[in-house]
Length: 150
Image (spheres, rainbow, N blue to C red):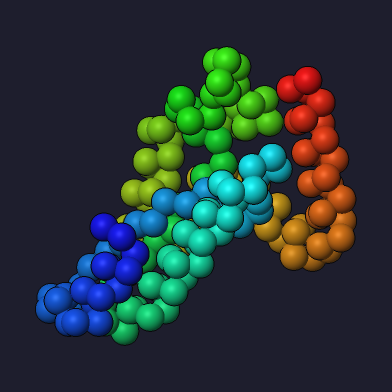
């Protein structure tokens, strides 16, 4: 369902039960930025922002929102065109089952931000603590990834 359609349904009062739950799947890239994929990062940032908007706009109407922001998950999505994997993602990649377990646990406590990779929270703190240092580190990571690709 498109975001705008979802909002229209809420504004028109179609949720009469007074309860509901949305799980928005974004990515760690929605909080941190993917080093070599601007369009991907921009859309994931938008998904996080939309999840935040839904959460604060509809919490008084009984709607709970969670936003899933995993880093690497062992699926075909993190494989490159030639079948090789992105090393920096695979090193800490979790299984689909591990990701699902994190979602279930977070939804049981109605936690907004679901971070199956605990280091993502640490990276977010480092990012906002010193943006210049973060940008420099990301530049180095991007250059390393591009050099490995040849």
